[in-house]
Length: 180
Image (cartoon, rainbow, N blue to C red; front, side, top):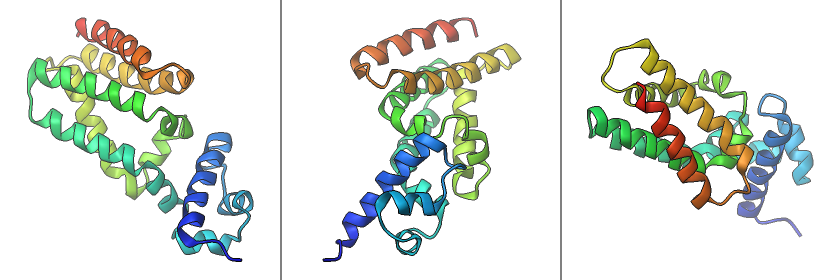
């Protein structure tokens, strides 16, 4: 009996997530994903136009949350924007730490893909908000180190409950931003 299409669609997404976590986005082929699902590459291509479309769907909830954070930041200025940016990014990183883990080390390359170009722009606005109104290199450096550090740290603590990880990251963020 043939599998139901929605089930196959979800199985392909789950297999892609697992493969990306093990061998990275660049190191995973559509054939690898098909093999893991137990279907043909043509079946994968029936559900997804290409590997980028697969990644886009996997990352869609995280990107939607980043877009919402971007809108919240835009509604504030100065210290309020900085606070919203720090708290919002920590919440995002904690919530989507598994997705972040999938793409470790590949963010710069992925941001060059057309489907993710707007993510780069939102990241730049997030860094600007974290750096605050001071137009100093040290503030921008602190903001970038904070973002990179949080993104790198969250996947390392997959098993720590959100209620423990979030306050620890917020404390680090506040300390890092105090000096800016």
